[in-house]
Length: 237
Ligand SMILES: Nc1ncnc2c1ncn2[C@@H]1O[C@H](COP(=O)(O)OP(=O)(O)OP(=O)(O)O)[C@@H](O)[C@H]1O
Ligand SMILES: [Mg+2]
Image 1 (tube, helix red, strand yellow):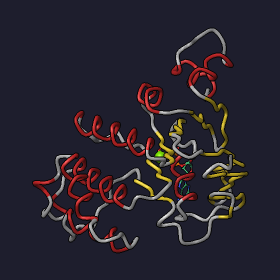
Image 2 (cartoon, rainbow, N blue to C red):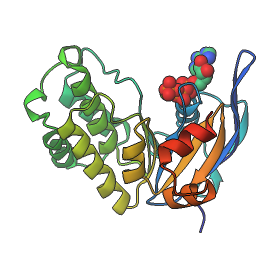
Image 3 (tube, rainbow, N blue to C red):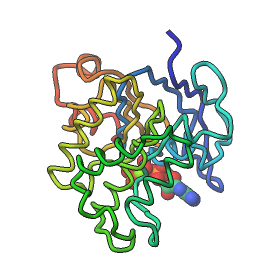
Image 4 (cartoon, rainbow, N blue to C red):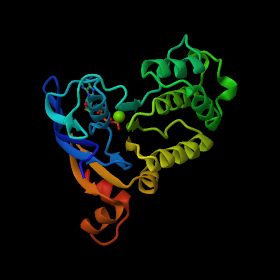
């Protein structure tokens, strides 16, 4: 089966520093792939290259077997690390903006309202971006990005900053997107939630994948049933 997303030899330099050093991985339909790695490992850089916000120096990114072109908005969506919203747009206007940008079919408002409701944002629907707390900004971006309904969804540290209810809703939302066939790549520092949510994991260090597999294979390849945290600390040491 052709993977939905196939990344080969992704390389990115900033000045002389190599930040991604030939990273390769694939993502299947309906798979949740976790990207772990210490600060500075290159997770955010990977996301920015995948969604076209950074130009890689080398490597290929294929979507359903074909090289990914410039216009990726309706194929790959990113929920970024820092939740920057438009200060002068309301929460609802963020959703409407996305709906128009990716030309959602009429009736998108029903899904948009359900997403706001899920994250407890209905009462903040008409609040300006500049008046939102950090977690509310994050929820706005999650709702707006998921509304776009792209087949590949990238989440960069999505849990940080969400309250417990928001984390639960996001976990449930990811599970339901996954069962509808959305392919998800998410970075996280929360090893327990990676273990609970992801089908497979990539552990990155200095721009390469130092370990890949599901939790069970990572454990058996790294011997004697140690915790994922031990394995992480070991392979990124
Ligand atoms: N615009 C930039 N200019 C120069 N160096 C950069 C730039 N962006 C990132 N880097 C460097 O690239 C490396 C990888 O950064 P990146 O943000 O991808 O890491 P990360 O794995 O997302 O880390 P974190 O867990 O802290 O979010 C770091 O060494 C960082 O300093
Ligand atoms: Mg990052």
